[in-house]
Image (cartoon, rainbow, N blue to C red):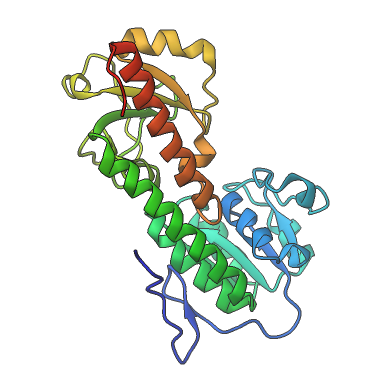
Length: 286
């Protein structure tokens, strides 16, 4: 099972931008602009050091109620961040704009850049945060849980035939995911291979009726970023000519500590979907 590949170099810990970070020295004041990593910060026991978040950072709800908001992931209020005097800023290559991060970097001493592309990349996230913020034991515990969740996902994928899936994230226009995304990697760990196979963009638009859609076995409607609802299922199933179901978008797309629950959620969903399909076709599951 994969371990963290992130080693502590003499100059510190290295983030996704290649920046070396030393263990925090002095008071730690964290502003997180990444919802899933705000949750990770809290799960690592750093909630008291979290002084700012985006409006999309909503977990854990009870802890975050008292933490000031500084805007959204892509429309950060620079003055609001400056007023909080953070020692560390947590950002993500996909979720935050380069312009905002560069501007914030002019007055925030330490900017930690992240870019997980697969569930295994969370080992490095845990190690990075654990090393910088002095919570190595909590990070190691999360890593152990992630190894167990990956093993459970692999067991499900090995026990069931692979399926081709369409994962919808938006409508008007209809949009899906490329295989190079974190979501696609999460789905793949339980044997759900996302379509299209190749795409020049990470989140391509689609028109129902395209040739490659004939290879889809089932369709998932994500609850985020577009909030698909039960009322959308019949329409999509009719357009795709395939079974359609809702899927918890946070479980499939949030990295950090949520990856552990996400892998277990997907493993159970894969098992239950397979059992339901077998029941509908009259096949008896072992």
